[in-house]
Length: 239
Length: 332
Image (cartoon, rainbow over all chains, first blue to last red; front, top):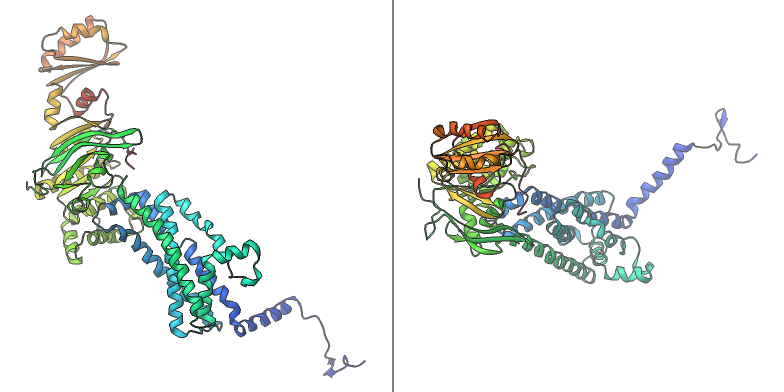
């Protein structure tokens, strides 16, 4: 009768089931305590929403379809408004919105202890890179909006780009990807964007990560703007 | 009447051999027209006749397949920007952004035409009577009635004080009171400011009451053109119209033989007799019909309408004057 025979008052202290709820809280409490102690585990979780802000219909492209269908776009076209402004103005609004949406995500990260290796300037760079990515990407839904004038096509367009988000090194380190997955991730601009954003948070001003990220944004932007402004010209030409 | 929007050659709008094809189908098939500065020109035709397509070419939204057009003296293809600075356009269906307030739409409109905030404000107070939206101006357009939308639409087309105003079916779908209000405003714009107005309509009364000159368009071509009075006179001084039960062909020869009868047309169960002196002829017509054994349901003596002109030049009636709000789908 050793160990289980410590006495306290009239009863002895002994093990007994804590109960489901208490157990639940114990386990969750431990897990939550751990989070601020290893903030680097949060980094993908911070970056991914930013990617989705840009991709999943933040753009004003569906509003553009509404304008085209209602005829309001025609009203704009009969005014002497600069034709490029019609699209760039919407894109500028998108840029502001994507950057604004990044702010609460970042604040949450700070609360949980994520620090920027690159300091306050790095935070700005992070916002800018995210915003530019959003801007670069937004060309696709606008191109679809102007070519099809179909709201359903615009709203579902992001599905086309879903693979971009997953076939990257966001969730798995590069080495863990094999075969065709590795190949796709290698050619996926998102891989380089995410590497750049991650570097800003955890490693500092690492040019070998940042330059490819900027290159990826520029490349995607070039392709999407080419498509979007081509579609705009076709709309504006009145043929 | 002033002479704003005059071109170098004097015309506010000039179209020569204007053609627009969509695939095989020619929506506009060789339209020639000239509108003088200060004129109200009414483009009358049924749905699908090519009215909207013509307007869309004139306002630089659609490029012509062939032919040429100039508005306010500027070529619509070569100098679209110059044209846009000089025109105001209210297209069908009062296209407005439901998410914005009326005031926001008008201010945006002013900005797009390069007006300063002060100038826009000044223009809006000048247009106040037309807008007539009161507090609703600061509410979102989504909650506006059809008449309110139309008035806002018209105001938006006028903020920058254009020389030539295009109105595509400005009163389609409006109640009679709102319609009358739009008519008054169109007249006032034209009388007081000398704005040249090109309007399309499927309503005979609208063309008759508003337009200085009417062009009747059918199947992409102008079938007749002139002042409403001239057009009506071309049909005849008076018309005797007999609605009959069954075929009336038997009576035609006898009617043609009558004194002072200029023309007899039969379309189904309707006989139209054109004459310079209706009151004198109507009795003889009744007798002739009786003698021919034609059962007459109704016999009317009246002066010609634009609908009679339309019938004369196209072979079809334009339909009732209350066409509902069916809209023209071409040119989109």
